[in-house]
Amino acid sequence: MIDFDYKNPEKIVFKNIDIPGMRYVANYRKKGGYETARTVIAEWKPDDVIEEVKKSGLRGRGGAGFLTGLKWSFIPKDSPLPKYLICNADESEPGTFKDREILRFDPHSLIEGMIIGAYAIGAHQGYIYIRGEFAQEANVVNDAIEEAYKEGVLGKSILKTNWDFDLHLYRGAGAYICGEETALIESLEGKRGHPRNKPPFPAVQGFNQSPTIVNNVETLAAVPYILKYGAQGYRKYGTEKSAGTKLFSVCGLIKKPGVYEVPMGISFKRFLYETCGGPLEGREFKAIIPGGSSVPLITREMAESEECTMDYEGFQKVGTMLGSGGVIVYDNSVCIVRALEILSRFYAHESCGQCTPCREGTGWLYKVLHRIENGLGHPDEIDLIVDIANNIDGETICPLGDAAAWPVQSAVKNFRSEFEYHITHHTCLPGTAKY
Amino acid sequence: MQWLVSVHLMSLQVSWIVEDKFVKKSFQPETLQKIEREKQKYPDKLSALLPTLWWAQAEFEYFDTETMDYIAEVLGISKIRVYEAVTFYTMFHRKPVGKYHFQVCHNIACSLLGAEHIIQYLQKKLKIELDEVSKDGLFSITRVECLGSCGTAPVLQMNDRYYENLNESKIDFLIEELIAGRIPETL
Image (tube, rainbow over all chains, first blue to last red; front, side, top):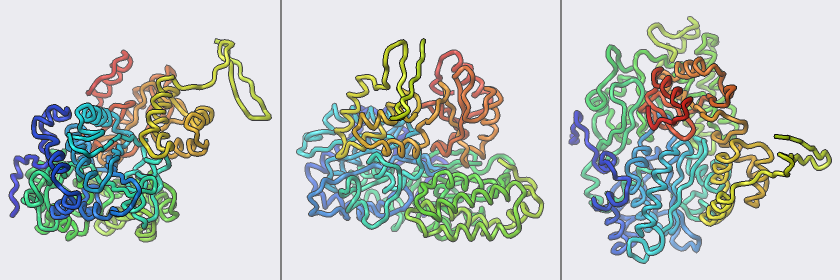
C-alpha cells in the first residue's frame, strides 16, 4: 500500500505552489532555491545528471510518459550544432490545468529545472513556450526570468560557475496543436504549428535543425527535487514503473475540483471520493476521463475497480491512459452523446489540416455527432462514427488524430445504448441534460 | 478629420491621407527597438514574427492586408509568412473587436458547469450577436476552446485576463465595472 493521506493531501515535490511569494527569486533562494543547480553545475558531470534522472524513473508529464533521462540521452554528443532545451508550457489539453499552477506560483522551480536540464544536454539556450491565452502567467514567468538575470542565475557564468545559460519566454497565439512538440518547434520558428514527420526526432534535428529537447513544465519542475534528494529520494514515492508523484487536475461534476499532487499508485476510487469529495449532492458518477480529453473514457465501474490505480499501468489496465493527468468527471446527469459532440467539435476546430484523415475525419465526426445529439441521426451512423474514428486512428503525422478518435471509440463501446436511444427517440436519455 | 482614399489601380497600392498629411502605418519607435532586441534572441529572425504580431495587435488592434505587409517589411520576411501566421493562430484578430473582448470557453468542463448559459446571458445583456461589436465599440463576444482553467469553470478571458467560476451576478458586476472604465482584478 502506498502511503497517502487521502483526506488531507499535501504537496511534496511541488510544495512551493502552496507557499505564498515563491514567485520572487529572493523567497525562492531563502528556501534553498538554485542551490541544487549550482551544486550540479559545479560538481557533477553532465552524463551523471542524465544517469540520475534516468534512475529516478521520471517520465514525461505532458502526456506521452516517455522516460525523461532517456530522452535527454538521445542528444548526439558529437554534434557541432548548438543544443536547445525548450519547455512546453502550451498547456491546452482539455481538463488539464496543472502546469498553470507551477507557472503562476512556482516559476523558479521550472527555471532551476531548465538550468539543470540544459547543463545535462549541453544547451546554452532555452525557451519557454507558453500558450497565448496565459497572458497573466507569461507576466509572472517573464518577471521571474528578469529577476533571475539580475541575480546572476541566468546569463553568463550563472550561479558563479563557468556555465552560460540564456532563457527566453515565447508566447503562442491560440493553437492546441502547438502542444505537440514538433508543432511547438515550428511555432517557435515563427511558422504555423504544423507537426513534423518523425524521424528525425527533435533530439537530432529540432529547433533550427539543431538537437533539441522539449519537456513539459511539470517534468522540468520536478528535476531540482530529483537532483537534490537523489533518484532514490524521488523513488520513495510512486511505484517501480511509475516513479515519483504526479499532479492531477480534477474538473467537471465533482465536489472539490482542483490540482492535487499524489504519489503514483494510489487508489483512484479513494482519490475521487475522499480527496475530491465525491459526486455532487444527490448525483453519482457515470464516466471519467482520467488523462485529459484525448484519452479513452471509462465507466464508473472501471474507474472504481480495485485495479484502477493512479499510475501509468493502473489506468492502462482499465483501458485508458494516465495522459496529462487531467481528470474530467461526468455524473449521471451528463448526456454522453452531447459530451462527445463537444469534444469532437474541439478536435475539428484544432486539427491543423495537414493530414487528410484528421482534417476531414474530425469535421465529419462533429457533424454526425451533432446530428445524432439533435435527434436527426440515422441507425447506421453509430457504426459510421466508429468507422471514421478507426480510419483516423494511427493514420496521421501527430497524435491529434488518435486523440480525436479514442474518445469516440470508447464512448460508443461503453455507452452504445445511449447513442441508440438518441436515434430511436430523437432526444437525450431521460434524466440526462443537454449541457 | 478629412479622409481621402486614393487607389492606384495599376499597382493596387492603397494609401490614404489623414488631415492632409500622408500617413503610412508604422510602429512606435519603442516597439521597433523591441523588435530589434527580439530578433537577437533567436538563431533566425523569423522567430521574432509571433512576438511582433502580439505588439502589432496591441498597436493596430487587428490585421488587415496593409498591416501584414508592413510587418513583413519591418522583419524583412516574405508577406506569405505573415499571412499564414495571422490566419493560423486564433488569437490574432482579422477584424475589429470590442474594447472589452469576451472569449468564453465552451469546451467540456465549462459546458458541464454552464458555459452555454453564460454565453446566452452575455449576449442578452449586451444585446449583441456572437463575433459582433456593440455599437459603442465597447464589447464583443466570441466562443473559444479550452482556456486551461477547467477547475474553476465556467471561465472567460476578457482581453488578457481570466474571470473564473462565472455566474450571472459576476457577469453583472464585471460589465458594470467595465462600463465605468475599471477592469476588476478578479470577480
